[in-house]
Image (cartoon, rainbow, N blue to C red; front, side):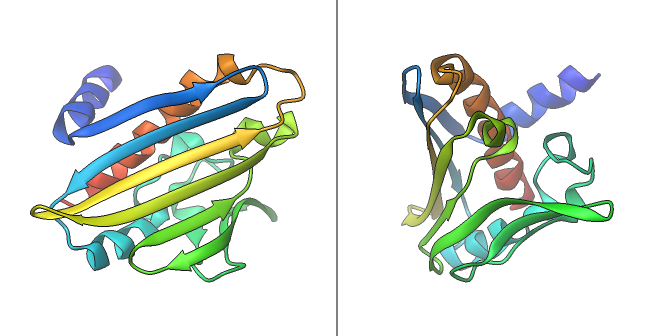
Length: 167
């Protein structure tokens, strides 16, 4: 049943995903979705990250514990019990066009990587094209090329969930 829901989600939102490049110490993945929402609405929905990010890809197991403060220096953070997690830090915020965050997502943190997520919102025919590109470098274990498809899959799932939240 879980697989049927995943297939339905994949088919409901046109998206493109790709490992742009990878080697032992670096990876670049790019996810793109097209939505009928305006750039302002697409931006606002992206900031409600706790409403569309998968709980399965959180430390607390609760997506509602995720928040995104889109000011420079702001945090993509998660409450987790008595503590919490800083997933990424906002470096550039240009509403409703571009959001750039720095940080190592999930297990990449423990690989001693540095990461940059660049999210752009471009007016396109009938709505907005949203592109999420994530670049990570470092990988103390030299396994970026093996992790790149997994990172691509996880971020692709998140962007599809985001697009679905706009319907």
